[in-house]
Length: 525
Image (cartoon, rainbow, N blue to C red; front, side):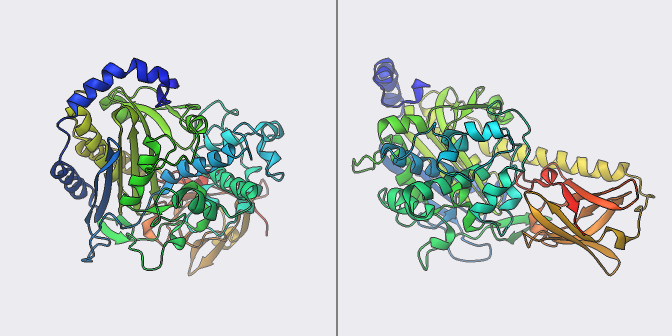
């Protein structure tokens, strides 16, 4: 863990010879033209209308530029001031906000959450009592992957109070602190905790105590708080091979989990701050060395994505406070990805190289990660550490293989179904209101001889039900940009009356935030 305490005396002594090697080897760093070429290749490979990139190296902004257009079909160019939704890259900012409060003595990482939010409850009373602020940020709650995300997404009408109330009904998948499972709800709780402790809304605290002192004045805690007239990239999705604009599916509720909008120029200030271990570019310390060390200290072991294990030798990975911790060609690396509907982001920080790279694109693709990894590879290659992998091709292939496997799974399910089966009951018998304890109500109705699904919490989750087999249907969401069609299985009582609905995504490629499988919708009328 100490190798990530960037300024520790031990690291300085042990690594002094290595630092000399890196200094000499970095004499020939990647040129702007080389970075431009990587971006152009990624845009073509992933059909990205626009990409923004920032590189910080050796204490300076080495590169900051936009490529392509803000919206497909538009002539408006992306530049280094164009705002992009950075998604879950925001999580490190939320952790930093808590670190500021820790420095002020207003909280400690291992304080119990219920001491600040008395209404906080997990499914298990013991877990509720033991749950700490650190646990909010480290994805080790025992909840399943993405549990409860439907409370927030897409465009869900929930409040922080709804999130906190719903947590007690979400059943764990593993024991507390035993496994890594990514979540967003607990970061919303962390944002509410910041608000309670600081006495001001989370968004205001983030902007006033972190973004503004860092010089990130064009960035905002949510898109709704961006400056009037700011250039904001439009999200896009590929739907049946056609590029379409889309909403993000996010509301201001997700601010602490993934709400920030920022530019390449703004993110360069953030990366300098991280490389300076809590100091601004002009030498002001916003976070103490002690608290900064807490932010990047590994807390939860996690699986390494196969492509990184195979091609970058990243065999051991962990999660700290808002940061992924791993290695890239043997070099310590902090990183995080971010995604909203129609936009993805990736950020990597390599402290030994004094290097950080950020990219975002206005398409739901792996373009951002491909660009960042390719640029980092170029720097390490010049330092004798990289091996010259083509990360754009590698991630493009991985994406294609994943989608092909998902398509095959869906096709196989339809091929193996009993196409001659019929629903057990007349369609009117399935109509009614169904309620899940944490999610709320959905309604099933009959329109022109077809069952329809309506969510009471999320307007986009509406659409006709196509019969699959027996008492199982597939919800075909009217908004085809969601790419999240779901099985809807009606469960009958012994008396032959429909009593509940269970759901799951039709395709294995569906984003995990569509956690239909966590719903237990019981009929209430």
